[in-house]
Image 1 (cartoon, rainbow, N blue to C red):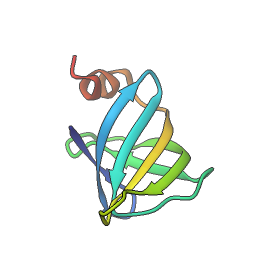
Image 2: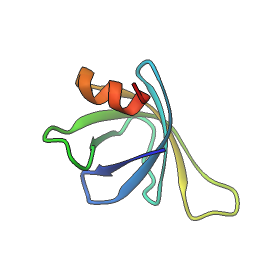
Image 3: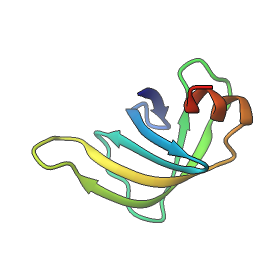
Image 4: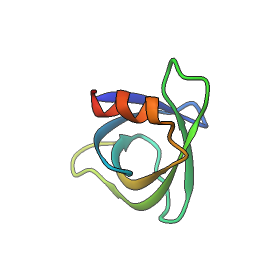
Length: 83
């Protein structure tokens, strides 16, 4: 799993990436329709995640956020996909 840093400094872990669809886990909640700005720890540019759904994980303090990547550079997409 890959870790990203959100715009407020919160760290989130990417569970899966399928095309432009992404699922991540974060201590921060995000309402549907919100735009999160995320960045790989060693990347210069941030990319957006348009939130589709957000639910608290049962028995955990983390939220499962489903969304769509926006403006994700190809090099970063390939790194996240493990290529």
